[in-house]
Image (cartoon, one colour):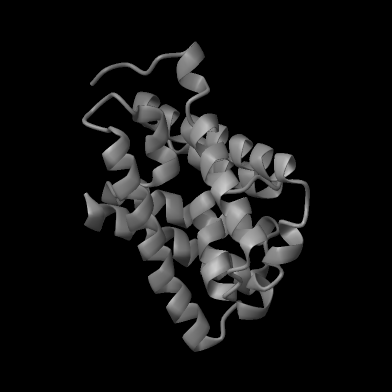
Length: 192
């Protein structure tokens, strides 16, 4: 489980690497789709894709913790690559400005991303179509919603470990968790 989680973190880190290199606009959002396709086709474990599955398919609190740690370790490895190559380090440094908003807004951006990512993976599982990934990934990026694992990559690449940034990251992790569980209140997933 940990290795599959690290792999998902590596894929998110690669998407973050491209996004930092070309910017977080439409081009960066489109190339980020590659990360999510790799996660789906490799059957790796992404925190935001699994939080809505607690209590099902052997996913419990312990497993969510392992997945989150593995994802962060994976993005850490790619952040080392980015820092060593000097790719996007200056762009990542703007992370402080991106999080320099009230904590409630930070949390809500995490919640919105969690909801979108959960719907993407739910539709993938239910319908086996890539359309939710193709449209959903750019949706959360261009709508300025915050993905905890992607943000972890930015923070580690920038080396910005101030208390406000770390607290914002924790709020986004929590927001991703709550957002990732909203859909299941209304539409339960089919058991497989």
